[in-house]
Amino acid sequence: MTRAMTIAEKILAKHAGLEEVKPGQLITAKLDITLANDITGPVAIKEFKKIGIKNVFDKERVVFVPDHFVPNKDIKSAQQAKEVREFSKSQNLKNYFEVGRMGIEHALLPEQGIVTAGDLIIGADSHTCTYGALGAFSTGVGSTDLACAMASGETWFKVPPTIKVEFNGKLNKWVSAKDLILHLIGDIGVDGALYKVLEIGGSAIENMDMDGRLTICNMAIEAGAKAGIIAPDEITKQYLKNRSLREPVYYYSDENAQYEKVLVYDVSKIEPTVAFPHLPENTKPISQVGEIKIHQAVIGSCTNGRLADLAVTAEILKGRTVHPDVRLIVFPGTQDIYLEAIKLGYIETIIKAQGAVSTPTCGPCLGGYAGILAEGERCISTTNRNFVGRMGHTKSEVYLSSPAVAAASAVLGKIASPDEL
Image (tube, rainbow, N blue to C red):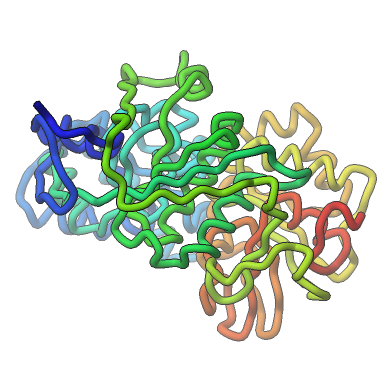
């Protein structure tokens, strides 16, 4: 009789061709998808060429999404994008996404149905953990590991233990998925789930749309987690219907599966939450933030650039104007999201409020471009990290929040709740 297993353990066991796995076990597993971008891709391509294999393991399962410095910001980034483009063409890869067709990778892959429930996915980007929202096991790796996986279609894992997190109850007004994950990271710390799986559930998650679930799993890495994962349900199945390019496989944890620990939160006690510099764990509820003037607000990224995020942004900005001392920059997650937001009037509302809207790109999230901070400047951002110098000058400050708080702050010129408008 096989041992009771979690979702993560079941996915790893299946892809390793084993009846069962347990935490700490070393396995080799077959991969469904490998992913790289315009920063990590060129390194992986260089290492792949050293291996001496002519072709990637599967031209439909090796994915390249240039999204960090595109449209190219300078000669170096243009060169990197060119290397990814030429390699993808030479390999006849099905899933290479050029400017105008691309999006921010972790918004794009679920939208295009390239990743699905039950998958085992690695990407040379730490926020690859986003796809756990679909009931997949997905995690970030280094470019060298990725190169080997591009060649062989498999990689090794040490099976991680799982922490179960339950968010129960009804969300307060203006409280979103971003507030829940910031609250969790504030509670357990940036290494609170180091090399562990965060299996996230509870009634608040069961009632949450896919956009919110993707936001939560996206930031599992900010708690040190190897992966974040949410059990698939009817919302997952509806999202994947007519979208998934491969047949989804739905895994569920056994009732008596072993967890390292179980954390339970009553979401009715959670306020809109802000992470102060210079760590995502440095959180405060909005009622305790105080008077903090800002110079810039950023709404977008692989964390919060989805349609629901643009909807709440437009709701708050409608009939209002961005504070004269603030620059508001909005990055839709993909071309499809951008187009839908135009059709629904969200983009017009943002521009009328004097916000700047960019083509889908990672932008300033990683200190890339299109919104870099100068010395002494403060930014409220819906991105996922606020380390020293993350978005520009080492003497600038980044505060993390939900789109609702970022939009309200852009109007008021200081970090604020939409209730203050």
